Length: 318
Ligand code: NAD
Image: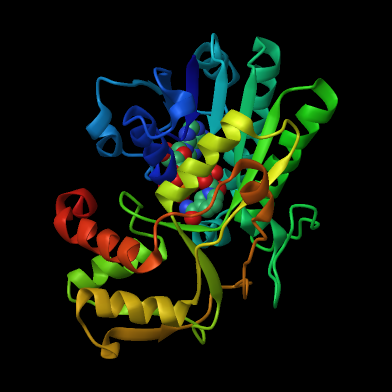
């Protein structure tokens, strides 16, 4: 079996590749793994260093139909992680978000259709649902994205659905909550705060710090994606969540404690424009249908993540 992993040099995609090569996803045992990545600022060769030689790496842009057709030829499965992913960047400039996330996904879906790829897993996000005060979103909830990032992801998510409905492509969509873990580019809150604290700086906490996110370890996300690739039903959406719901202020306090510094390191800054208040997915479908549940408890998972950044200064200082 040949598996093409787009965005396989990024945070989650590289975790998926490393864990597949390590044999953690039984359905992918013995599969040939091909990474398709443009190596933007977020895609790093170092993220694939532990599996160099075990995977084929193809440099290419998902917006380039000829390059995509070349790399997807002969693929049985496409797992599509490639995207522009940082909400703050989408606020200061949304163009790449639209072209990579929307157009790039359409290019991949078309190539997969034309080439007869057997299955396409589209990795979306819980942010497509918008913001929820209480309760949790089921997969049937309308998409009400609020940032250019989540709007572009919603566009790609709906295109994935359309290629299933219109062309019969075997597509499955996942919508996961916030991930944390090693190899995350230090612009996202966990690695940004940890690396700033390790360097003796303050950390910028947005607004009142009361925005709530559900934190899931990246390895749990990758295990869910592999299960969906193996046994998810075509045309269906699977929410992935069930980590730990925390306000940003509480997350910050835990990071301060993990690094061993005090709250004087918090710097309160003006809130992000359009900042979603709370995300929460109902993940009972993937639990009931595929038997998935998170395995990495938040406390030890966060401690190991902080330790990884402390031990890998070369990776993030670069
Ligand atoms: P990331 O920013 O770390 O990595 C994105 C990868 O995509 C990089 O390797 C980059 O080089 C590549 N890429 C970007 N534009 C490309 C293009 N035009 N052509 C080819 N490759 C390109 O992102 P991540 O956090 O690993 O997220 C991966 C996927 O998971 C995204 O689709 C994201 O929306 C989704 N997701 C992320 C989270 C999270 O908490 N990080 C949660 C839910 C869903």
